[in-house]
Image (cartoon, rainbow, N blue to C red; front, side, top):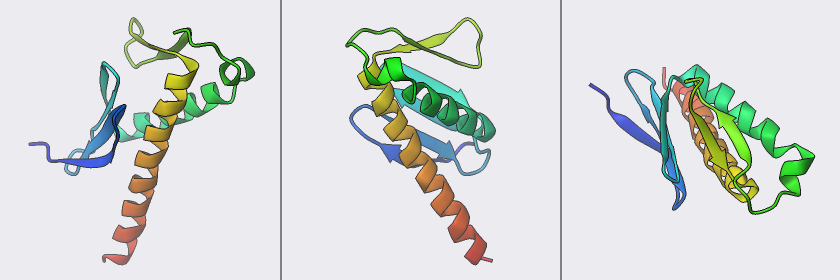
Length: 108
């Protein structure tokens, strides 16, 4: 049975992770994806890479950024502003994950 822990939450979305199985749930806007922890890191790196592209940094307010998911037929489509807000959520959640891992090193 999953026991979710909130890693980060804002008006745009949230990231929670089950403390037993490690499954991670990322909600942003009207999209919710469930991914395993290693896939969370891959997803975070993919969003970081997208945010570093020149055309995204100069982007218009048009939903023209496609982010693939683990299901090849489903993409998340965002504006440049939205993709940067998603990155903030993912990075803050990642900070919580790293802090928790450090805490558990001293917990033993």
